[in-house]
Length: 353
Image 1: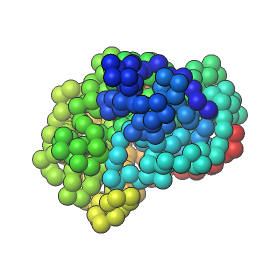
Image 2: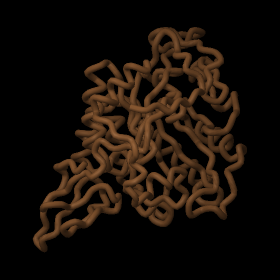
Image 3: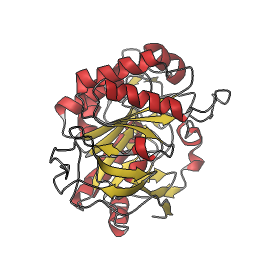
């Protein structure tokens, strides 16, 4: 379904520039942007995937990953097709790099999605699997319907978005996980075909201009962005610009898409990155997508006792009170918590809407 969008303007040479992200695609009639799903038609830019999805699935919220946002609760996840980055290592390349609308086999209105989340007792809905920036209008309308039913919304995003749409988009989000894919312009240019600064701008905006709860994920790729020096600079920047209470997840790379010749990330690399983050003052640093109870659990930054013990996506022990304070020393743990965690566990449940 073609849906009219607002973030674009006409150029003197007759082309139209899309203003949703810093890529600033300049389009002739019927031409598609880099993301593939935003297209110039009838002298405007339309979203071609509104109401269409690659499918719907109920996940643990920890899989997004969000460790400090309604722990243990189920989240209804969905995405569309396309992406505004070109990451050579993309784990969802069959969706994000797709130029085929045939993969969009599921149809659902924003109202349908909100009702399905309510029906299946999901506390939140995630815009994920591919970049939600590029299907912003569909995501925002869905968020509005979710909020009517008391359901929260989560963006799993690369953070590559322009300032004006960023303000609108995040005014409808309750939480986000932002991929900080590396910490050099060279990495962003050569590996993701984008630039670093707009992502840093998004992180600063979220921290200082919104009430959105957000966490950071960095996928560590052997020989590309996993040096001690780069992790030092990245974590020092987080503490300085965002503060020590923004959680960061270091996740393992597995060969995919255009980087099949690079080996998987060893657990030791993730643990080393976590140690550097903690040394530099980050309160909550995690190793992701690798089973390790010690490094995936949450610790009180004051008394150092374990307040949320995790085995994979399972919550094994929970020692926070209803206001999110440590039960041992009563120091607040940053995040969005309730008196009891959910009990969804690690289940993954595809659904049809």
